[in-house]
Length: 314
Image (cartoon, rainbow, N blue to C red; front, side, top):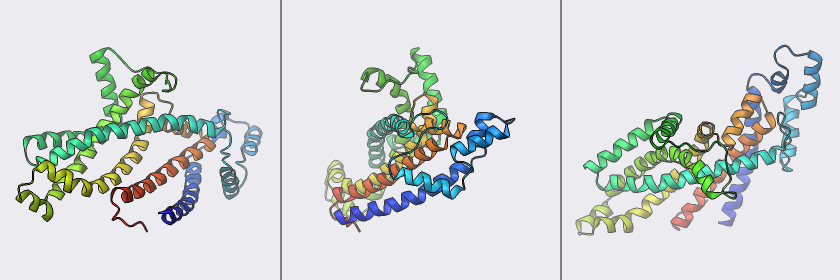
């Protein structure tokens, strides 16, 4: 396990460096730059040249990248060009909001989607299965921005209530934090629960077709016993893989939900950084997302071994 972990971490460092190159080039491929944002279209050439020198934009791209990468290895992500704040502090504050949204969504989606998928698989072809399949279809088809907006409008109209616009950390007031996060989490969780349910249903239906399961059922073993004793371990590994993919999808969907519900998370910060061409914030934020995705994949592989010791890590 130790050797495997060391090998994966070394590979992750190389992957992160390659990803940083792609991120750096993609950020600079966006039309316009921070100088144009600050001075406008009718800018003074002398002022524009001075700003480009100040931000280092007059240097070759490869030189800008190497300088930025050297600072990253010392945990120095620089200062925001438009806000004048340390990038590391901005990313840390926004990331806390996004991770709270992501893990709360993942937990709720799991609690809703897995039982629904199990019931649909056990009662395949029956009315309960068809009802759950309808829920799955609607959840998979609905765009996250539309569903979040409809949920916000529906709750506001039905209960004459809307979530507060000012984010409050859970360390300051847990009740206020829950009232702020309730609708964003529910918006993402219900849609991801549909994907969960559909995946688990297919896994259960496929597992019920295996010979050892059919044999157990033919011997008169109750369905509940067959599921918990024989099926659960076999669907656990693909379910863990799917959970990792869902977590990454939630991080992607957070951009829309955070903007819709005015949450000061990483997605909203990246969106505003694109609009203002704030390269230091945008580069650091995207790199953090890449690292989170890699760590998620590594955690999934390690959970394989924990759940089923027969799995060999190499």
